[in-house]
Image (cartoon, rainbow, N blue to C red; front, top):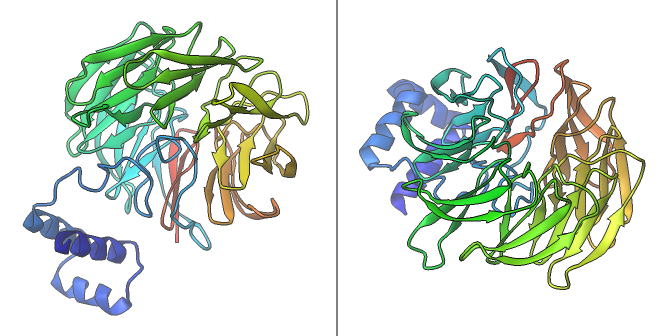
Length: 406
């Protein structure tokens, strides 16, 4: 507990949340970065101790949508008045959504490279190449970063050095983000990834060895969601697949009505997702039936939803960000952008952040859908934002990663 407390204090200092006098004291000792490094070494701080639980905290966004249920909600606070702190230039379009942990941003790009970038200064720490574009968002768990590639492999890299640990081969590209779950007996952690080979693959996190795989009827484009001993994903076969995590067996299938390009969000037995035939739906898995459908205009939904206790927020190719009642699907508001919204929104308190193909990153109010802030990057933002306290990180198709802070 003492070790965790000291680490927390250092992180609070790093994020500018403790008193100025504390900063002054640190500056008289050495640079902040040196103090953090020496303290970490002195305490024997393990590389995996912050991200080992794989869920969003105020200082960690370790995976796509923040947590295994893919809810898209964070306990972290957006910067009050965001300003651009740095831009890390890659030079190739970025569709991968970032993961953030322990002061490092992990993100892939269309050039097939996974990058680790220092959060404070926007400087590259390491890079690792694959043989295909990386649209998959990284998963940071323990001391490892997991990511899928267009070359058909699921990769595991050392979080600290980027050194390869293993790679697992599928028969086609992996575009969706990996997810994770503990094995039924709690002795291992398993990594889940969908592939265009029609299979959902479950592999051991330490060895990369296959545990089980489940065959669907078409491409799997999104990430699988995890909740209550089951994983759920939608595919290009227009079905919601409900799979037992214990052994990969089919629990049930539910007709969605059209093919699903995005990732579902789960909350207990409820699943929320949009599809290509211009509908956003809520399905009750216990009853295996559609609870409600939302239709506004004839445009598909590729964005993955963010789900709170009351509301569901999702983007559409109708150039709008929508907010509906979670229980009924009744419209609360729609916020209009100038381009399609394939980026998936993140909710923090009463605020929502999302990108648009109009080249802008927006923050809008959750209660009214009014614009509170925007920043024009200029090229489409199809990646989803990653959020920790007072930081928002997003990649753009202009080939750069942008960091907005206090």
